[in-house]
Length: 115
Image 1 (cartoon, rainbow, N blue to C red):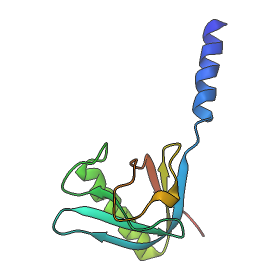
Image 2 (image 1 turned 180 degrees about the vertical axis):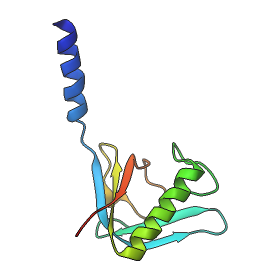
Image 3 (image 1 turned 180 degrees about the horizontal axis):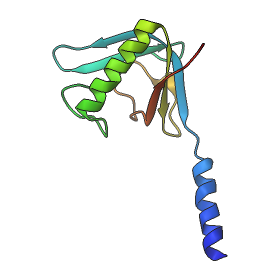
Image 4 (image 1 turned 90 degrees about the vertical axis):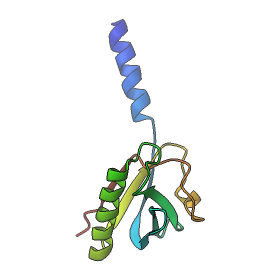
């Protein structure tokens, strides 16, 4: 019974953890040829911010992950589909902007399927 209670508490604490999801169409997408920074702006929720770097790892985002993200974002931009970026609890989409890395790297991203 003790283990069941502990398991239940762990599951409930995980479910209670909220995340911030920034969703919208990609307004701007670019890459700096001098330093490898990938910049993105999602409308209507963000300013232009650096999402990753194709030459150097940032946090848990490797260069290979960044290249994959860039190509996925490019496909979404070309098709006019929305993307969603999930950030850790306590993060705010309105804080994205000013040509700087966000205070936290995204934990998940996807292209939205909107038909």
